[in-house]
Length: 86
Image (cartoon, rainbow, N blue to C red; front, side, top):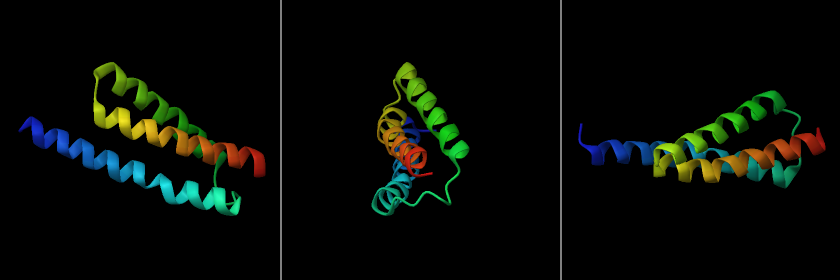
């Protein structure tokens, strides 16, 4: 497969999966309502995305690096809000 197509697929995947965190983080910050959120799920996601970031840095994959540089803080905000507001 063409390397440009592979890189475009990775970039699109990164945009879609990272962008999906923005509405949840925004809603959580705005309402401070975390009752329906699972702390264990978000902790697993935070650890997993942090590992993806480390992996992306290791293999120098810019879609992975950029997506997780954005995603990790968004998930961390959700975790912090869950810890603070239950």
